[in-house]
Image (cartoon, rainbow, N blue to C red; front, side, top):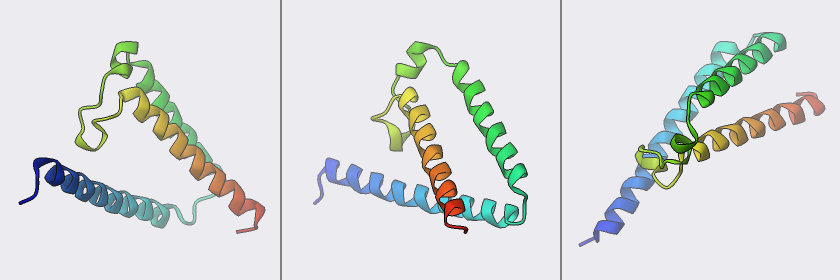
Amino acid sequence: MPTRSEILDTLAASQEKVTAYFQGQRNQSYVNAHHDDRMETLSADLAAARQETLNLLEQFTDEQLAAHASISFAADRTAGDLFAANAQHAAVHITWIEEGFRQGL
């Protein structure tokens, strides 16, 4: 019989797979919907999304940012860690876009 820890590890791995699947679906839906958009439009959308994130971040106190997240897949991270991960994730996407432009894609 699996231990409690093994069961929790399995559930966490399953949650990560489900989250990755739906994130992939959401990403592909965005690509499909905006495939023919002009670069200026995409850039403006990115700037607006970034500003929304910054506006949300400003609402958090230092204590809230230091608090551990209450969502299961990020229970070992603080709210501040999640904001930082979001920024790093966005930077990776921007790097990929810039590399694509350099390659003429």
